[in-house]
Image 1 (spheres, rainbow, N blue to C red):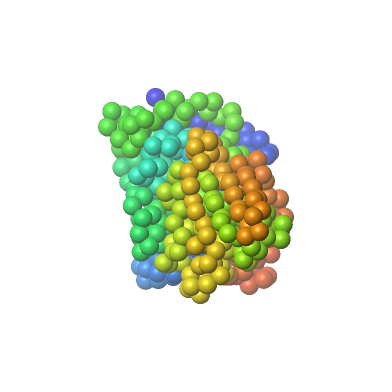
Image 2: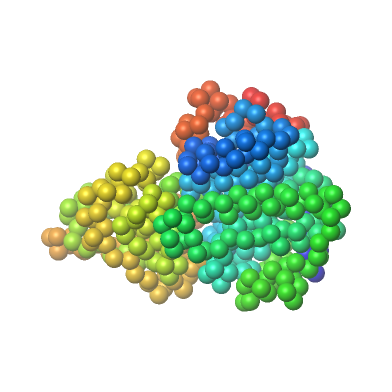
Length: 447
């Protein structure tokens, strides 16, 4: 049974059985997530949720990033999950279309702080969370993604097993936690199709983190659920993805760790825009200027055309999901960071003029290789008649096109500087980078 196989894998995995490269990758994922959360904490959704959490109060169990006082573990998971996903800087597993870090790590961190777990326990929980969540999402992709945001749905299972590992659930309890997670998993794609709705997308990761932790806590307390939530006739897989490939969930389980397939993001926009941004930066390096362009033809896969193909965004958050806006921003300004998503930029005449020369089309070959490749082509016709072509199958940050650890440290410093003083930034970078040396995870924050 799938649920039992997953539970057995989770209980039998220990820090000592993990390869060193997997441990290192988990540390990097943790650091990357904390940096993203620091930036998200100062955005509007972060402010709203922080006020709600602080007003509610409760037992001081876990860190809410950027706040002095600890909050209840469930509140920490909720807040940190929202912060992490809020500005589109959290990590991605390409083939499963899952942002694993933003639901998994806040849930695991909150659980670890609640019980005083070690850094090694946290690393192990992160690894098994990524493994289970990614495998469930891979089995359901791509049909599930037509209606459901994988981070909200499959992320709930991932957060539940990560928190369950911290809470030392046995196999039976983990199966119950999976059951509780499945009946709480949600996240509809409808919000992608309205300017007002898109800002609520971080709630998917936020609630997945909180509901996953809650599921593990229920199971730890002896509260039972179905043990066939994934595989049952009316279970999650059959209902949420009728074409699900169930065998992918346990295929080679424990042999090749999925966390090694993670993509890291350098731009403050949805990953569906990153291939196009990379290509626009190439054009800029070649000296091509916006005023030189007669036609900018962007070709990509069908999901990207549907989700991010529209120019002229109406809101800042919609701009993060506009491929023409992001490509034009890269070409005009040479970067696509937090500073590029402002009300002023929404009405930038240079960007508007360039977007008016953009088209976004589906390339059948690129579409056939999605989600294994999140690719793009740019075909540019210049006013002097010159034609320029650029293509990439793997945007920067993919495992096939890696960014260096130094670049990720720079990203951490840049994002965390929006919230933390310089002395705290360097202290957190150091302590998170050696998280597995702490006997109690509380000490990681006290440097």
